[in-house]
Structures are given as structure tokens and as C-alpha cells.
Image 1 (cartoon, rainbow, N blue to C red):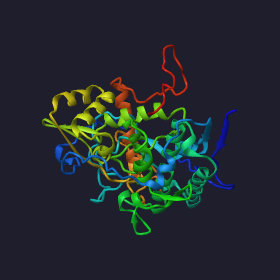
Image 2 (image 1 turned 90 degrees about the vertical axis):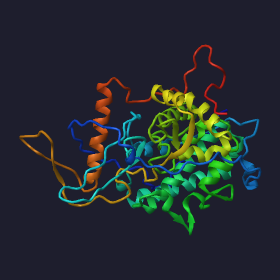
Image 3 (image 1 turned 120 degrees about the horizontal axis):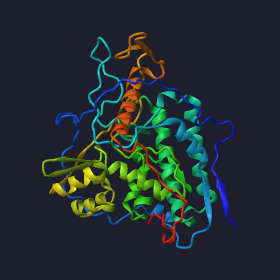
Image 4 (image 1 turned 180 degrees about the vertical axis):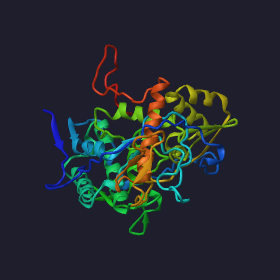
Length: 407
């Protein structure tokens, strides 16, 4: 008998009630790759050290068992919330966004400044009220209580992985929403400890951090490096926050989609002469997945590389983890929009040249939405796909058993 554990918010919670509407402009614009000087880099790193022999023994109880029980966890509430507050910027087109224009009559620039701001996804933090933010804490605590009633390590591996990915992302979103407006997630401290290392999550009575979930539970027990793309880091330069909650049935295909998008994005891979420049994320996870950094990473990238990136892999001789974009993945760039200049001239408009936006959306959000729309329109004109499709529950003749299992 299949047992279903439903994860629900506490009574009266208001998670995901925000449902803003957006005004968008139709003005055409060509996106160009920014000059080299406009990209953001960190110094190249040396080959990573092998993973430490010691691990956190407290978390050994979460090592997956070999005889799983047939239990699933329902994340429908989290799935609904994600669809209300996460804006996908569309598949990568390997064209960096141009520098944003300052507010008319000033030198002030608002909103995300990264050339990668038209990749990945953005969270609508400015639309999240106090009750919604409080509900994130309630939901995170609900997920924590699941570990007290169910032996997570005894679930099927995909169910376990989906649980850890969702718990990590819920907890991170909770902390960012509490601290917003903030420009960079890494600037946040929880009880005087950096956000990534603060043990504000409790599983089975054990305090753990976001880093603990990633490195001590998932990275040490899952050998497929595609798991790295399921952990949202809150940064424009990291894997995007998906608009679908992970589940035991979709986690494998959804991670493949996330991996393909990231590998083929400018924030993931670029070329500089004979050097393959990659995101700093790959250096961070190298001790677990890429001990021979250049060879192992390239073998991983080629699995997901589309034509442009496949060419870069062939044309380059060395690898540097030098791309970074630490700004928060927020529609407004981690700052409240200005409450003035609520009208703008629409290029080419004659009869009604003024286009307005709300004080919640602001000029920066309005312009980013417009840039997103133009990007997608240009991709459609060039015959490029603007959506990713994944199948999570279809078995075809010849498919191996457990074809979507993440090892």
C-alpha cells in the first residue's frame, strides 16, 4: 500500500498569495554580447584538492538505505508557491544583456546590473508581504518535522533527493525574504554566522546548515554531478530556482533540464582565447565531482553542451573557474524600486506616448520585464526554442528500469 505523507502549511498560512500583474513593452531591441570588460570574473584557481577524508558523522544517519520503503512526499503547496513568485527568464541564448540605462535625468541605475540578468530565474521579493514571508518559516518547520516522523534515509533515493533539494531551497528563500532588500546573499549573517554555514535548520534533532545539506548529505551520497543544479544559491550566477517543486518522479528529468540550461548559459561557460572559463560553482563542488578538474569537468559538460558550447570545449586547452555574478536573483536587484517616475515614453508611440507602471514593479522591474519579452521574441524569430520540456512519468519500449533514478 503506497503511503503518502502530505507536507502542508500550518492552518491560516498565506504562502504564495502574491500574484502580481506586469505591464510589458513591445519595443524591439537587439541584445548584444557585452565587451570583455563588462563581464565579471574572479581569478583563476588551481586544481582543487581531493575531498576531505573526514565528514560530519552527525549526518551519517541520512545515508540512503539499500531497502527503501514505498513512501512519497507531496510538495504541491511548494510547487504552487514557486509558480506564483518565480519568473523564468527563458532558456539561455548566449547573448549578454546590455548595460542598464540610468533613470531619466540622473546617473542612478536601478535593478540587476549583471550581464547575465536575462538568464535563469528571478524571484519577486518586492511582492512578498510579511504574512507570506512568515509562511516560509512555517513551511520550513513543517519539512523539518517530516524527518521526525519518517525515516528519510529509508525512502527511495529520488524521494530523498527531492526532499533535500526542496528543504534547502525553502530555507534559503526564507532567509533571503527576511533580509530583503539585500544586494548579495553572501552578505547575510544569521546569528553572526554567514548564511551558508549558519545551522538554523533542524533535521531529526540535528542542527544543520545549507552547506551541510549540500555537501554532507547530498554530495557525499549521490555520485551524479547533475545534483548541483538543483540547489538554488540565491545568486544570478548560480543555478536557477525552478518553477516546479522537485518530486520523486520529476527530480531526474528536471535536473537534466537545469543542467542543460546552466551549461549552455554565459554564466556557466565562456571562451577567452584558448581558455574555457566556467562558473566558480564548479570549483566549489570539484572536491566531490571533479577531482581531476579539467578532464572531469569537461567530461561532464560535454553531456549537456549544445552546439556553441560543444565548439568551445573543442577549441580550448585549459579551464579556469573565473565567472561570477554574486548579485541576488531578484527582479529588482535587491533594492526597493523608487516611488517616482511612474510613466515612460514608449518608443515609436504617437497617439499615447506614455506607458505607466506600478510602484511595486517600479522602473527597473518594468524595464527588465520588457528586456525579457524582447529576448524571447527575438529567439522566436530566429526559430530558437523558448521552453524546455521534460517527461517524468512516461515509459517507452526499451527503457531501462528506474530510468529516471539519480545515482
